[in-house]
Image 1: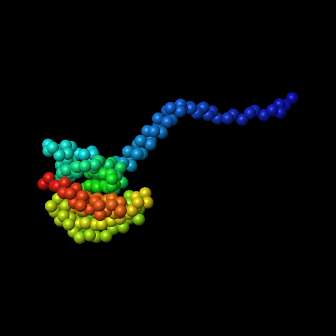
Image 2: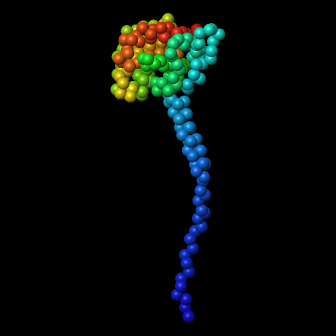
Length: 211
């Protein structure tokens, strides 16, 4: 008598998936988020890495930021100015950035060593635009009359753009010394521009070269 039951088809063995505890999942997720945040903060593509905020203190009684690598010294302004690392990242300022309140205002200092060559005016202005246009919406700029920074001739651009729907206006002083270029940027709400005009020159006066 024949058997009408066919043999069952064998299913390949599949190991059970191991369930991870929720605590482990949250810990891994937090780690990934932290790495992504640090990558955004420190890996600003095309620009030097950020220096530690504030550099190191000098022997003077006035707090200052000094960098041998970038050959400059900056005396911090008095009053309500505080370091602002968020603004530092927004405008790709690898050296420092500071903010004050009432009225709100910011300034930032960036530098780049071109190593083997001296960049021309068009190149350093183009880089200023690149650093600022990523933060200020509807960014526009115009060349201004050349001025000086740290006692040396400097190019200047005036710019404006919006941040969180607030129209901002500012200036960027650009100094090139041999292979090193510095961008010293100041900005505030357009409504406060005249109120802060006299303060910017005093702040820029705190910047000097070591050699």
